[in-house]
Structures are given as structure tokens and as C-alpha cells.
Length: 90
Image (cartoon, helix red, strand yellow):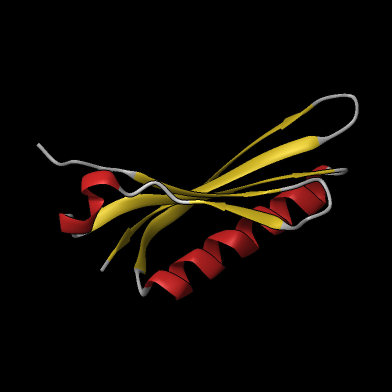
């Protein structure tokens, strides 16, 4: 059974990312699911910031993306939150 952990970057309302990385036993794993989230005033900005955060995370960790990016978004009256996730390997 494979162990998959998630790395998550969350962007604030003003677009400044607050880095929240969770690693646990992922250091020994070759592949894992990585993700980036963003909360912005519009859904377009939230999508763009989440994708940018995912690309930055992959570049800084030296991981190579595998497969498609999964994007989920939710909108309230005031803000939109989007999460981008992708499988990546070292």
C-alpha cells in the first residue's frame, strides 16, 4: 500500500502565501500528492494564484509533475477559495 501525503500552500486574501507544509513520512516516498490553495476576492484570481503556488512548490521542491492538475473551487458571498492538486515524483 502506498503512502501519499499532501503538501499545501495557502494564499491569503491579499495573495501573500502562508506556507503550510506537512511532510511526516513523505520524505521516504518517491511520489506524493502536492497541492496549493488560495482565497481571493474573485474565482479567477483564486484559480490563478493556486496554480502559481503549485508551480512554485514543484519548482522549489525539485519534484516532477505527473498527471493532470485537479482544481476545486468554492465561492461564498465575499470570497472564492480554490485548491489545485497534482501528483508529483522526485
